[in-house]
Image (cartoon, rainbow, N blue to C red; front, side, top):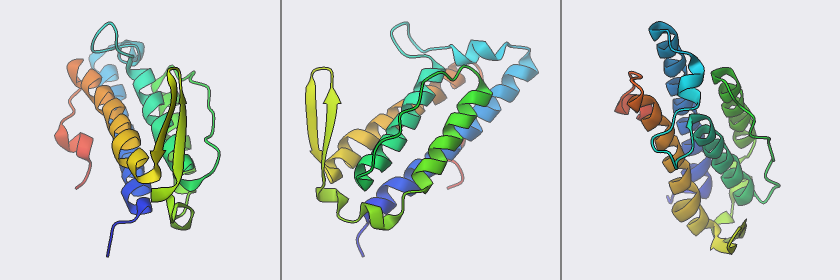
Length: 168
């Protein structure tokens, strides 16, 4: 039996969003235990030209909901990127989880050959659904999730590989 587009996307995105949520919970607890204002973590970045933690989480959310919607052939929800606290970031992750879990396997049938066009500043990018998932959506999703993890790890939050991977 072959791997379906649904199996390669929705459960993967949902699992990693759950792991991100758990990492953020650890970060919030760590800030409290160390007497660090949570905003320090929320606004932290790895390099001056990189996005801070809050934006990394927002983009990971955007990649997940955008991937699910585009593969299902439905409109991508548009949400304001106003989250500025752990509570708000957790709510964003929960809203993303609810949206992607509302996409069922039947909606993704045949999506490997569906044309996905992204409007970019420098022009349109066009993919088959398969190439979009494997070469754009998942790599971008993992990049921003990893950046969020690395920001927190860099700031002394006690997270490790198994927090990133979750229960394997």
